[in-house]
Picture (spheres, rainbow, N blue to C red):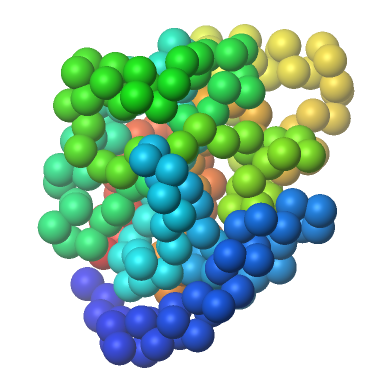
Length: 214
């Protein structure tokens, strides 16, 4: 287990807090940030949340949908959260309706679905865009730090998605855009992106990667 001086992390987070609001609303340019703590997001109640609040924790940031073939991953994410939350893991869930319009409805409807069907207890944020001109600045930064890792072609869903995207753009895998729901970014205790997991990635490998950071 790696022990990081919490005071040092908290101090660094406080020093970046002043830039948080600017990074959250400035979508004209790609965000430039040293770590994730320089961003703010909006929670499901419409309140602004500084990611500096999570300084010193391991974060898993995931874009989700409620009507997707990968939606059952909510169960595995909750298991991950149950196993590791007490050791310093936080999962930040960002519903997104950009992929097949598979996250319809209001935040309240999405949250009710997720808690009722999968019993999730990790934080859910407000719906966002992760690609395009309206992409959340946080996601612009995440994509700049970790490119698309490729679908698992041994998974039928991965093979299908790869063929569908490649039919539209033979070089689709060379840009860092989020390709589908349940793409995950793993953040270390210093606020750095250390890995990106595509939706077809092995959840056991993700679990091990989380454990290695705790």
